[in-house]
Length: 118
Length: 401
Image 1 (tube, rainbow over the protein chains, first blue to last red):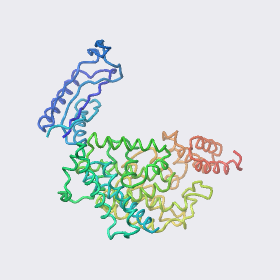
Image 2 (spheres, each protein chain N blue to C red):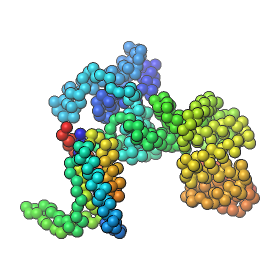
Image 3 (cartoon, rainbow over the protein chains, first blue to last red):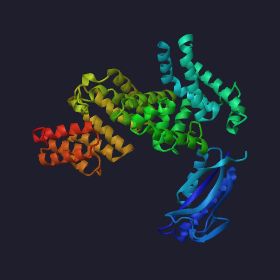
Image 4 (tube, one colour):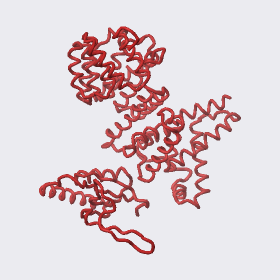
């Protein structure tokens, strides 16, 4: 078993979906999470506040420097993430397929360095 | 030395099979390649003295396996990954459960996985299944060898790290994934068509392998038939100066009758299954051309019907352009020109060459010259330029342009 990170790629610009559309997306994402749990693939998932809420820390000599804002401004940002357990990339991509349908956004799938238990 | 020649023959024929078996044993592509290369090096040393063993492929696989086990045992104390493989793999690994599948089929689905870049899929397939050296693949694709080597290293690392599985996809995913495999084989063939001929040979070999391993997939048979029929015209399609000779002007006595016979038989066999697809229909179109003893005798209405079918199954501007060529033969160049002018293919030199030819046949000489010039401006290969310049020269009444 391996751990995979599914990242939700959120565009910074463009019109956000209507309240109605958003409600449907949330319902679909909830269904997706239920499916993950039922299949034993669930580890963790959640949406993130926007990049304007981010704070960056970096080492500076002996000190740590704290600054406001995201590390890098981009046309996209990490909108949310989902950590899953899957036997191989095909299985992970199958979950990714469901995630991109549910969120209506691009999903990036990346493997973790270390294998998952069982 | 005959020994060396025999090793080379066995290598070409059996490298892919040996690697695919070893990948399953070892769970790692690099280890498998190393083991198989070791075994071939041993063969090169021993066979001249001992003679070629009765089952050369079996000998290579067994030797590679034993080498790999020895190495894993030696190195298992140092490396966790090797230790894992050594523990999993006892010398008498039982046969896999489930339906028996050739390991090469797993390997080609891994090499052609959609999570890899198209370039990587092509390089991996030629390297691991075809046994082509990195240098040779690099030459065929006109990329520097270190670039290609790097591409292979990255692709193999992604297969390992991202966990791309080593198996034939389940039935639900098979049509999609098989389409991806066929696309890679056809891309290799097309690269060879305009460039290095041994890519065509390799693509046909892969096509034969797939057709043997998946006899119930009509598109697999269709692709093989298509490649054989196109390949049958190789001796006739290049002129003395290396310029392409278009189909109507080819010396049909130089076509390879054996390849045509085999291709046509395959077309009949796959179409009988009643599950037509783009490769089968393109093969059928080529079979109709192969049937005609002269260009004039070509059954263009049959070809047009096949293009209509192809447009329904897999419409694209390039298919529409080819269909227009058939329309010109059946209903005249005027109707064809209307179809061509509606296409958005401005950057494609063949589009302008087809337009130019239709305009010439309609007697619209000035426009035809202009279209040939545009085609020339977009053509990249020297051979194609020579052909277009000749056409243009014929039209303006002299070689000076």
